Image (tube, rainbow, N blue to C red):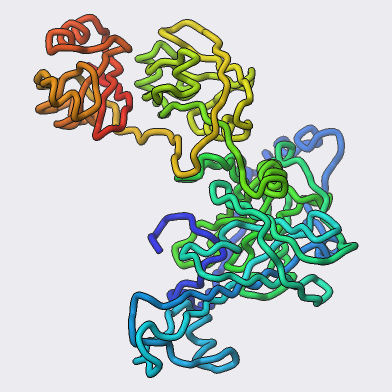
Length: 499
């Protein structure tokens, strides 16, 4: 596992996990200089009521919500094809060697297989959590808990808080949001109540209930550390960040507020070791419920598609487009015959709202469009060459194999410094562009801005570039900075260059 990357909390425990006992001496220091404490912590600081600085008692809350939380055991059987004539050591559960390899996430050793090529099927076991959302047996959990990437045969067993066990079937899985729905044949089950994660505040107490390392009905507590966290390749989920202790096996379990309402699904942790390090992420329950409804009704999620490739705006790009601050989603490419193209949205437009709701940054747009159904009409507010316009767009259906993500931004603290040449008609056909000039060298400030040899410059400040003379004239008309639209190996993005 790569260091410094968030990962699924249901993954195997890293072999680097070890039992370390650390003792630290802590000295409490005053927060204020003498005479300042009384003035700083006045009743007005706390509001109209004086609040006691005491920790809440979670006992009644835990007792009330635990019956709604379940343990999910996963058994996946995968046929061996990559190591003919081999099989794992025949360790079984209860064997000390089996427990050693399982606990520390070490792959089972391989021995020659006496039963012929291919070997015995590999059996993998995992554990996760979930919670009951309907009395007739529907359960919400994480997609990565119940799905297998290698396509093996998966068997699910759900164990309730009262000890009863049921075989479960997968109703639907949505890997984009990491949400899944499973079903057991049971009636009159206790169900959770849902809260509003939008009303949750940073600093509020929350608790998690789950099965870390298979330890059923484990309760941990903490606070909401941040809201609307966007993680790499997770453009559809504005995560809740908490410091609640989450470990492998907690995946899919509920995050409760002090009212006993579910406000999130515990999904990922940030870790260097594979275990809890103080940063956990939960899927807001309002996002999960929208996915759940479609999974139950259709077995899959249908998402709206606008048909644009977007990127974020930094300070330099924002100023290049005449904005007072970075906001919205910059259109770097429009797919031919897409809803955006038919509505007249163009490269260089900045999308600032969807049906009147502000697009604060580029990460908002995929989620806002993805929550809409194909065929739905939406009003897109945009800035076109500095003018505010609105376009009505009828959304298509997003191909789940494709992703519309913000482009990665190079550094943009450079001055002009380009050497270019014209493109031949054959080169234009090969690269799929019309017009443009190719960068042969980017030296000094231009290189610092991220311009690379081989880039094709298509426009400067939204003015098309057909020839080298066009580029020189466009750069001569600009002020201290210019927004260059480039094509780099088929991907289009804007780069701000500063004199």
